[in-house]
Length: 219
Image 1 (cartoon, one colour):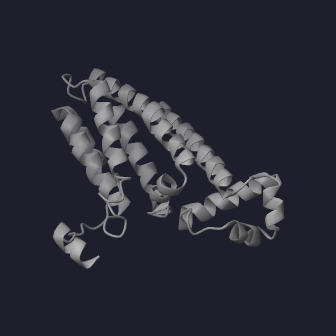
Image 2 (image 1 turned 45 degrees about the vertical axis):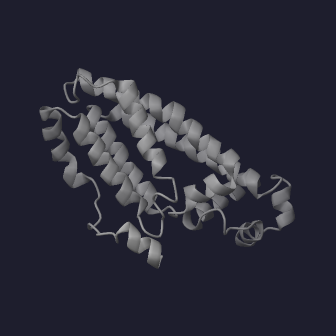
C-alpha cells in the first residue's frame, strides 16, 4: 500500500468514526506516525482528503449494490439485502458524518448527490420495474415517479433541522421509511414475501421520542 493510500484509508476510518469536522491533519499525521509535511506531498488540504475519501466510498457502495443486484432472487430480496447491508454500514458510522460533509465540504457532498440522483435513482427504477414484472409490486405504480419519491425520502433524512442527530437515530429513521415505502408498493403476494424477510432486518427497540415542542424547549 502506498503512502497516499495509507493516508486515505486512515482518514476514512477516522471520518467514519468521528465525523469530518473534528478530525485535523495533525491527528491523521500523528496516528500514522508521519509528519503533516508528508501529507501535504499528496494533498493540498483536508478538503482534498475528504473529497477523495468520499469518492472512493461511493465507488465501493456502487460496486456492492451492483453485486447485490446480481445475486438477488427477486426485487424484494434485492432491497432487503441492501437494507441489511446499509444497517451494517451505518452501525459503524458517526451519525453526524453526512450532515458535516454537507455543511462544511459541499464539493464532496456533490459526489453523494450525484450518486443518489443518478446511480441510486436508476437502480430503484430498475428494481421497481423488476418487481412489477415479478408480480411483487403493484402494476399501477410509475417506476420513475416512485423511485424519485424514495430518493427524496432518503435525502430528507440528511436535513439536520428535520432529523437532528441528537434526537433521532439515523437507522431508526431509515428503517421506518423503508417499511413505509415497501408496504406502499407491494402486492398481496409481495407483502407475504416481504414479511418472511422481517426477522432478518435489524430493528432497534422502539423509542418514543419527545414531542417536537419539548425538544425545542429542552435541547
